[in-house]
Length: 539
Image (cartoon, rainbow, N blue to C red; front, side, top):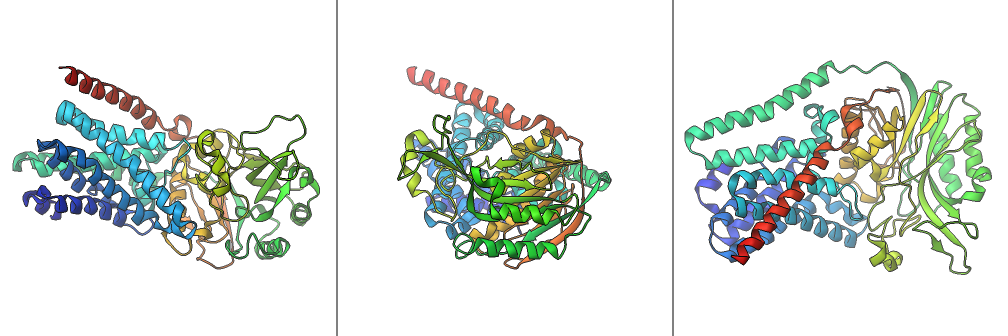
């Protein structure tokens, strides 16, 4: 009803009213967003912005057309700000940088749709919008400024029951769904009474069929019974004032005391959080480091137990050894070393496989475009432990043993559906997320992060054990349902039986098909749009 009033009152006539429309889209997206948002608002959230674009499209004033970019940037800036303001607790500069840069990319994407519509009209124009947007989100998955937190498909994370079909499409399918419905609703507002009725009927089908399909999948999906007992520890160590400056031996004692209260002879996995061993362990001392030895000794009390633990890890390069792209030189000697945010598996076996975090946080763990900005490493946001450009590995490591193949997913990696799928393609039949969400205080940040994990469970039909230093530790079943959820800022330990699964979903096998196709389609639209502009200028 509000949207109808906005349309028929010609509210887009003045700059102030155009700004209000742009702000209205930002507010709707904010209210709809996890963790406590009302996701169905996503189906109309873009309509005010589309009304704004349509008004500009119909104006002959070229200045108004150029100002559309400013209006859309205003919209996406506030969308980003309202949903990720909590980055402030880690770094005010980092928060404004992330908000400004991501809003810029979104505004550019929306402007490309406007250019295409100007050149080719409504049919091709509105067809290009979801293609451009999915291409943007797909591109945003894998480059130096990757920040996929606000990909539209993530907005349904708290309403996982209606997106069970993500096992076929991944999050990009949700983005496509949302944009298409917004376009349909917008056209219903523009149409006459009879046509509007037909468009609204089509919109109802576009909403209803995926929702009904999702509930059908949810109701009939049965996990195969391959249960294992898993214990998850949430030590609740203050990341600002204790974790990286306190006594790490005392911290490990606290962790093991919590673990002992729930670990039994039946326990197969004990999952500890990111950087549970924060001091930094060098590669040459790994086998005999005191804290590693303590964890080895702990496993001797429980047959078949494996510990998955986060740690800060350093590698010293031997003379003449090939250096990594992120290798650093000591200040007082010419030797080189590299630093990693890592995970390790410890058991009764002498083998201790390592995984080095691959998806690094821009500006914190990775300096974007090192050829240009590598000299700024010393100014990277310092969140304790190691900062600057960390080392990484191209492909993830699966921790294997007996029939349990665990994916050690470290923090930010859990936001990437296809990347987590690479663990599964390499044999993982359970996902273990290790994170430290205490940087963001008691804000929506850590709750959003946990909700996004539900989408990984659905996409790959893998049970998840989530260990947070603090925030939310929990278990998530293969339908995305959370259980044993812990509270914020309390030490906790949880135990549960979760099922292994070795079956591969369509999305796991094929990845982001929608993204790849949209990327090609966006390239085609860009080419023909700018070719048409060049030809028109010559005429």
